Image 1 (cartoon, rainbow, N blue to C red):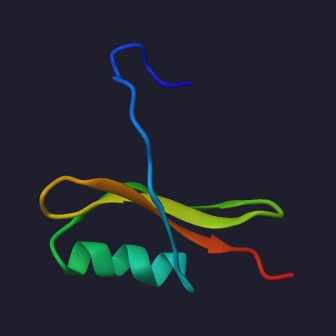
Image 2: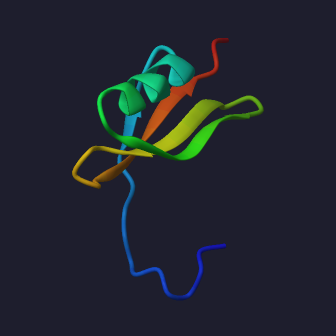
Image 3: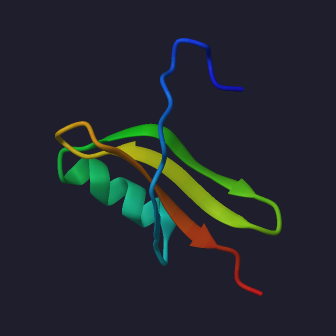
Length: 65
């Protein structure tokens, strides 16, 4: 659940081939990891990151079927 002090927002997801490698690249390029990569069963793997200016977005690697 989102804490009550968080204002309305939206989250952009970028489709990537490798969520772990892409998340590592974010930190290499000066961004930060908000939520490290995690897996969702039968969905895929994703993380939440921020670019060096603070814009937050998610990286999503779909599960291969």
